[in-house]
Image 1 (cartoon, rainbow, N blue to C red):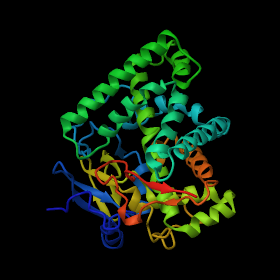
Image 2: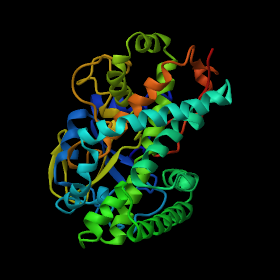
Image 3: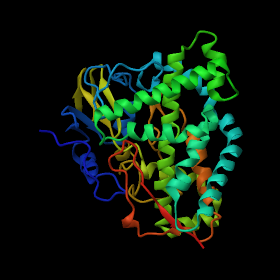
Length: 394
């Protein structure tokens, strides 16, 4: 029988050591998913880029062989969920949103993100030390930003946050996950209905005026797009802030380097993204055309899992890949994926992460309030991170 996937971590801040063994000896190997499927695991950087950019590998869950990692079975694809679509259908939806996430628009949004970061920091400091950096800063910041961007009422953030948490929890019963997803859909359906009746100046309002009223987009399709943006728009960033700050604070010399030269923050953010790679269980695809990857012949109906965390630690691409090197130069990381499905909101995520670190730099004597080995991690979640991060300051 193939080994079970995912393998266990030994050091919670590193991918499972099994990945390094596979990169060296069997970079395309059979593994068994929690549902008993035998699929191929891709562990090398070059092979990951190939699979994620080649049309012979499908993102459509209806494709034969598509791996099942979620507790809930893959049902019919919801309208507008373009992450689960292949070209050209995928491109039709994505093009509706690309103008919302351009370099220019993110530059214009940066002051608002900075203000939200300072607002969250003020709340954290008002609690007094020790305080939980996750609950008081890392979680609320991206939630506030995505609510501002989409036009989601802030009063509803606990509701959609809890439903998102269940949706991404790989240890929950399938029925519970299905219920949470349905509740989130119903909530967003009501929100979209309100936007159709009275569109504002937010992203959803613009989509209503430009796409729904012209007949280009249905109400259900906008609900599906909204769910994707809402969940993806805060879960990954929140967990990157938490685990990123743990990585920095447990190595005081790195934090000191950023204090000495804040201009290093964007480069440090890129290295944190590579090093942590919070999409811990990888990206799944179904083979729809015969292809050879890493010397292994794959046939239509095969399933593959691309391990982003393994690819981002590939010794053939990164010198000392297990070390956190804020000034690292070289090949781009794959934390946001690759190819046509590369994360649409990556510029927003980078903006939030950069402003989060910059907001925390002036906090005098910021440090962990517990030993690093006492930190609890989200091992059972699709998006990896820390549960809490107690910190203190002078």
